[in-house]
Amino acid sequence: MTEALSPWVSALQHTHQLAVTNLDNWGDWKWQQRNAVTKLDELLSYFPGLEQDGWLQRIGEHLENRKLTVTPYTLGLIKVDEHMRPLANDPFWRQLIPDWNSSPITQALGYDGESENWELPDEMVTPICQHKYDNRVILRLANVCHAYCQFCYEALRTLEKQTVKSSMRKQDWLDTLDYIRQNPQLDEVILSGGEPLMHSDKHLDGYLSDLRAIRPNLIIRLHTRALTFNPYRITPQLVEILGRHDVTAIGLHIVHPREVTEDFLVAVKRLRSVCPILFANIPLLSGINDDYETMAELCLKLYRHGIQPHYLYHFMPFSPGSQAFRTDISAAVALVSRMKRRLSNIAVPEYVLPHKTGKYTVPLDLIIGQPTLERRSDGEYLQYTNWQGQSCTFPE
Image 1 (cartoon, rainbow, N blue to C red):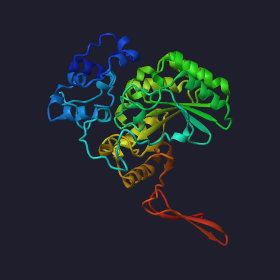
Image 2 (image 1 turned 135 degrees about the vertical axis):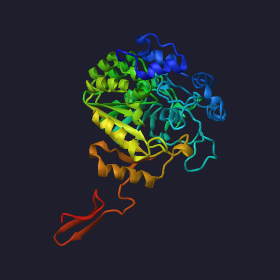
Image 3 (image 1 turned 135 degrees about the horizontal axis):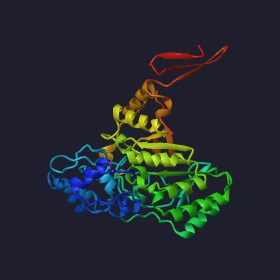
Image 4 (image 1 turned 60 degrees about the vertical axis):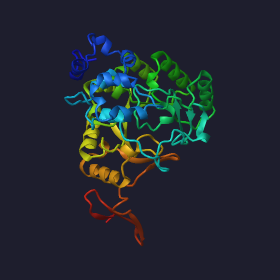
């Protein structure tokens, strides 16, 4: 926590009359979770202007079966107008509050609360362990999060109040450890959820100890959204645990450059002190980050602070909010192509389609024409379009 109250903390005190008098309380990640907004009437107390324009009714319809959690830290980042209504295009508000109009479910994209979009049954070798790709497994350590993105690609696990997904039990963990031991082709274990950092330090220490005991050279990766919604979770104690167990990589899930706050960067600095690889996975969301200026600003901010933009995810089918957040593939290709022309390659994420059978990298020359390989008497020649839009032949 910074030495003085951050500007958004002071603003939150002023506009929402939240009693934040103790810096130790504000910077305590558990305090943030205990004081999070979880009900519609609580949300109204912070944003009384919601009673206008039918917002409450729209939000309430979506939240009948879905969870709501917004930490005080995040509340302070939401911009409001003079009537204490959140700005309609505020990126935090749009991610966390489902205020879009309902529309009929479409077969290809709509969320129906049942259709599986990633965890195929034959891949779930235990209730918490998914083996989709050859050399790695992903462990679903939790079904809960610091805050709930209303577009969540794991909505069946995290967003539904009555989830059909199993919560982790001790026997599930023991069975998962046995599976990893019995499959020496596994190079990597990915800790995810939900939010794995919702577990206590003690529990995380135990899980990492169990994994590290299986094989000293096992690659351990952890995915988290904590830095956006509760950056105070990255405590010195947690950092010590991650370093002691040689966690190889940490994936930060992020959407918008405004998420990169002072406290976000304090957490990044702590993680960089013990973890060799920090990268970002970015969902592409219409009206939030699908324009060049926003995406370029985000990726450059990440790159500048030692975080590599890794994947840019197209909106996943059967996820909530498709009518509000889905973009066209052609528009996404144009966006990433423009970034490729103007930014360092290391600052440009790989654009992928998250198909339930596995990710697919979309070729950026999809629109302008695929490269062609020609075999001549003196060897192979590749014809392609370069970063300036010029037709080229290699090796000529």
